[in-house]
Length: 62
Figure (cartoon, rainbow, N blue to C red):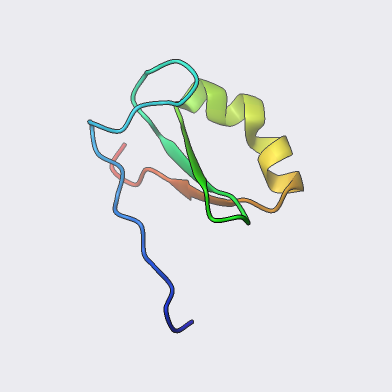
């Protein structure tokens, strides 16, 4: 897709938006916003994120 921005890989500096733990998942919302979640919160919110058709990007390093 022309003009599509790519998001960088998650690093140790990326933190969960709910609790501040290391981020393991980036959820890119249809509106273009993004949320970062640790493993625990990623599992807790995964079904809701899929319902709103968020693009889910797992941390590949862990």
